[in-house]
Length: 352
Image (tube, rainbow, N blue to C red; front, side, top):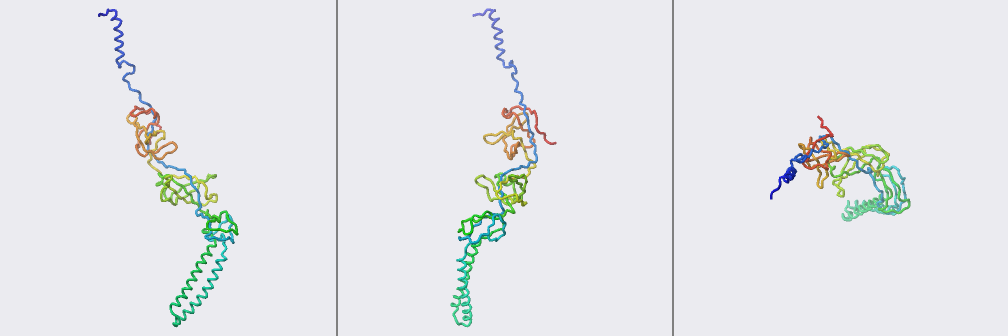
């Protein structure tokens, strides 16, 4: 069937237009790439860094003890002035020892008789008036009685309750005439002229703080800073929280410092002269690990990193980057790997 010339004249332009629309080269903007994303950046530069930690601690007396009697008995003397400073060996309390004293006098009398008998038999042995065996028995009796006296004297000494070291007495828990046993706490004794402070550090810092290091602390209600010197560490980590326990000795005596006080410690760790610190906003948390976006020849490159110390606004980069790398800080949620990127602003400039 033939089409008339009029029909061809009407259909022809429509076919030509349809063919023109099917050609992608005729679309507006066809063949053009998306413009690069503009982002702020940060140039990674080595710098001196010293981490400062603030951790809790507890003040303790240099020496502290609960005062218990070593034996049971009735208190017949009590020299316990609460809060009084006493010297080593001070008699705090005295238990009734009348029965022990009576036994001691009895054995001392027996010893005097036995010694005279041993002396006479010694003379007889010299002239062969008795056998060696008879003399040995009398000598053994003397030694046994002396041993019994030593045992009784030790028991009598235990009725004297004395201060094991110099310090300040606490509050008394008993009164004169009370019957006490070794489980009874008569009072406490603390040597508060010198103090120590106990604290713990997380496992990752266990090799950074050394014996002899100086730390500082404050107590509640005072802004004064007190120095202390690290004197000892525990032999191993605390399994419950994976931390290492430390002890430091307070360097200067201060009457305002009391044992048992809560202390806030300031610990300055060792300086790192070439630390790579990055703004915290540049680090992208992942399900496993962390990443940053590095500018690489006009494109975005995702790099996995290992981080260390974190401050209020910066993070230490341990592995994954090197000095001089340019790290993107903005538009991180919209950037994908190999996305074209244009640096709009560098928030820091490396030192020349």
